[in-house]
Image 1 (cartoon, one colour):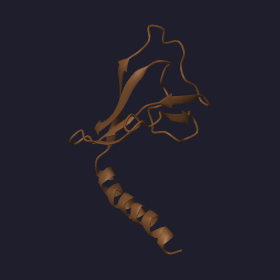
Image 2 (tube, rainbow, N blue to C red):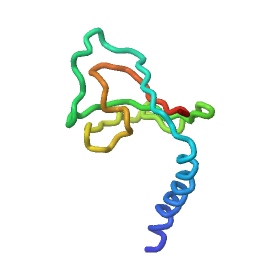
Image 3 (spheres, rainbow, N blue to C red):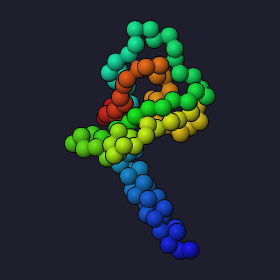
Image 4 (cartoon, one colour):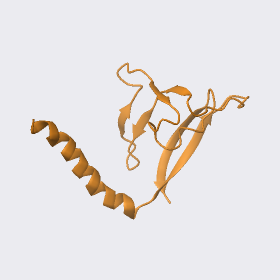
Length: 105
């Protein structure tokens, strides 16, 4: 029973240690559109389900730490407005290709 709480507690401690650093450096979210359809009239709305591929990279060196595109993984499905995705996913349009990045303000 004790061992069940060790791993989550470790992650909590790491998150708290990093929280002080995060407070020192505010990050700004940038949305970079890679391509978009000619007709951008269909905007995703709250409650819509989106299926997306994603790649997470470290800003410092570009190293990939997670991706839905490797090892035959499936795209990630989210419901907008459910609080299950990072800020910035919500304002996308049908068939739009983009990436998000955080940078120092």
